[in-house]
Amino acid sequence: MVDSGKMICPTCGVEMNCHAEKIDYAAGLAEPDAIDEDLGGVVEEFHTCPECGQTLARRSV
Amino acid sequence: MEAERPLFIPVILGTTRQGRMSEHVARFVFGELSKRKNVESELIDIRDLSFPTSDAGEGIKDSKFSETVARADALLLVVPEYNHGYPGLLKHALDTNLKEYIHKAVGICGVSAGPFGGTRVIENLLPVMRELGLVTIFWDGNFSSVQKVFDDSGTLLDAAYVRRLDKFFKELIWMAKVLRHGRESVGIEEE
Image 1 (cartoon, rainbow over the protein chains, first blue to last red):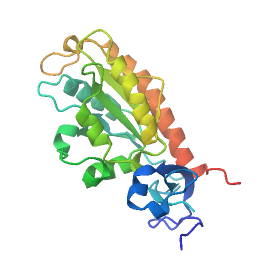
Image 2: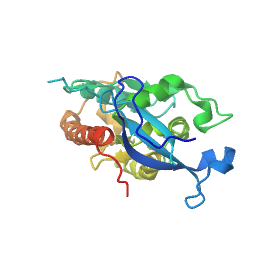
Image 3: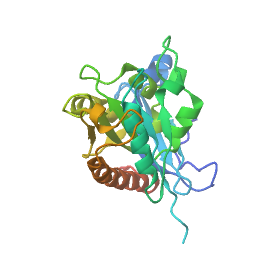
Image 4: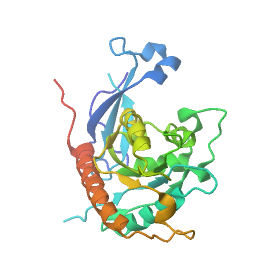
């Protein structure tokens, strides 16, 4: 099951901020089942830690 | 109050060509940028990255390069104009990352032997920057007739470039700060 809650920074332990979503068209070539049919690709979310600034990505649900 | 983390703005020298004058530009820009308060920089020469040409994209990531871009708050590209376009090996290097660029600022210094200071290569790069998730600024660095701007040892011959770069840096740093704040504090709207 894909998690849709807040991401927690693995370094700082604080909630990360989700500031972007982007379509990864190439990812859909390898994983056609992961494609969002309305958008035509795999949607990824980008979360950044307000403490250390690191950014992590995960699949959007 | 916790001290603000310094901004990290690497300078990328975007050509591998022998005899490249852009190296003088990149070293000068890196030196000036490194003088700014609360800014850290690093000079990345794509010649040193040695990406294979038998593949492309994220499949040929260089872990050190990707980690550096991931840590960056902004990028500063130094790019010569070759036949009105950008060097193919720069695009090859940039394409090895994707997630690392999201919501980060980018400034471009164009370099040319002619009078237009790389304006055409800068314009050609803008849509690429946009697709990578980078945010462009409205100041550029334009190094026209670059063979007259530096001597053979790389010493700057035209002091006006110091002031021009100062304006360019101010805008890039402002955008880098704003985007860092946005990445860390401004969420996308949920219905």
